[in-house]
Length: 356
Ligand SMILES: Cc1c2[nH]c(c1CCC(=O)O)Cc1[nH]c(c(CCC(=O)O)c1C)Cc1[nH]c(c(CCC(=O)O)c1C)Cc1[nH]c(c(C)c1CCC(=O)O)C2
Image (cartoon, rainbow, N blue to C red; front, side, top):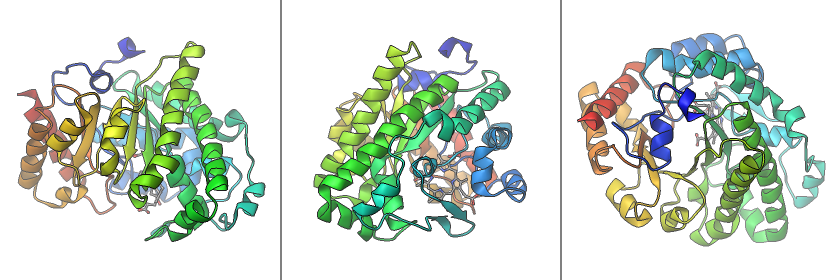
């Protein structure tokens, strides 16, 4: 699969090989900061965009037309898994996700479809990947993704975003057995879903455990890490058994700085870092065993293009220069009020400074 790509920097870095320079992509690179995204978004509801392969492929490709990115990430959302399990999820512009009927007590889990057919419920993501691969014509790798089980459980119980995640965290203390049951239900569907993404053409997979930082280290060790590891080891075993490429996998456990040593022992190839981590410290604590991805503060993009270039070059230097075991990114996603040309300055600075 690698040899059909004209640019496989990302895959080589993920596998721990040396690269001529640092590959770069950014989380939420397809999104509302791009006027061409907003133009498409006018005509469709958010999940209709995800479910319409031509539209999903179009917005996936938009950032690559503007910037010399080293990868694209399929346009979708982590909340398609709760939908496949039978829950209604709406995306309210300016507010974010909303579940009209969240899981209030473990009784509510009876409403879920425990083992939905992944092709029937999520086949539209495979179709979007196939269409994007056609349009990419081997330019850069395509990233597939899903949400981490704890992050998805948090949305399913809270019914949307939250400042404290107190309802979801209460489940972990009140209903430990049922919480694990729910988490494994999510993880098992995610495994099949990720395998389908690779079958359709995804070259690398990322699991977003965006709310890891809400957990205590003890709860992360019980309710997040084992599930994240279960996902990566099962996906890799299934891919090998089916004769598909065993693609590299990335874990982005936002806020889980306390777990870096444990993540370095996990079956993931790449560890995504948020901006609170010092690169040198992260390299030391992971013992050089994993490729690291990240981690510029997205708010740096509000600075001048000169400031962005300075911050980005400094980041590359702190990660060791960018020619080995490193993928440049930000520590979280693009914001709707970011300026596109400021992202361009970030990409140029990474590619320029890591080529030296
Ligand atoms: C937690 C999470 C979600 N979704 C995702 C995460 C994990 C990453 C993270 O921590 O940000 C992942 C995600 N969401 C989206 C992508 C697409 C690919 C890409 O990164 O370019 C990816 C990888 C598109 C999106 N997902 C969403 C948008 C904006 C929705 C819109 O157009 O109205 C996009 C482009 C909506 C979304 N989806 C979610 C939220 C909380 C929101 C609302 C955000 C907001 O309104 O600021 C759940």
